[in-house]
Amino acid sequence: MTAIAVQAHRLLGQRRPHRSFFESFIRTLIIVCAALAMVLSSISICDGHWLLAEGRLFGLWHFCTSSNQTGPHCLRDLSEARVPGLAVGMVLARSVGALAVVAAIFGLELLMVSQVCEDLHSRRKWALGCVLLFVSFALSAAGLLSFVILLRSQVTLTGFTLMFWCQFTASFLLFLNAISGLHINSISRPWGPLSEC
Image (cartoon, rainbow, N blue to C red; front, side, top):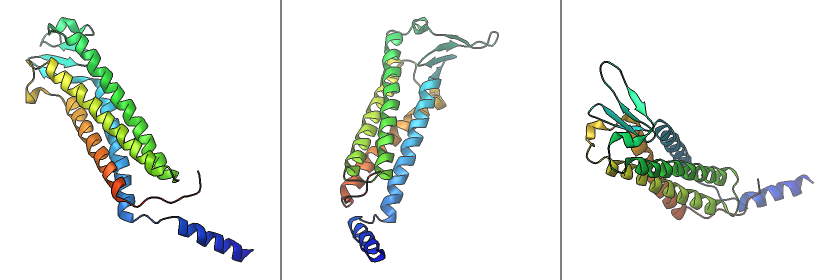
């Protein structure tokens, strides 16, 4: 009985390819960076205050004015900012930003599942997760670009807030992780049939 168990274990060991430490480390790093990008993007979208220009704070959800006497006064009606198309444009910017976070969540989940439950479809799950990260990058970049285009007359490099740069960094990380994930999937060895989770 012991000999049968040893032979079965040896056969299963031959079927399971050993991934290098470097590959496992890179895949783990991609997952961690994708999670960081998702958190940064979520915080940035929820806060939404992205541009400070001439005492006015422009955001995805609010428009604020400030003075020395009264302090900040915020309005949800973005048409009060007197910027053409701002109210409608911000709906688009925050919608694609929120969709970017959703796509990143599903992409990250697929990446993690492909590593925890290794089977014949793990490489496909990993590739699909990377594609979703790329979709998230595209949506996030579209939101950033639409915000900058809407407020192009107000934009200065020093006027962008920390939340804007958080979203910019998140977009960059999503792009970098998507490309890196697809690349490492293409150069690594195929995973053999493993036990199901």
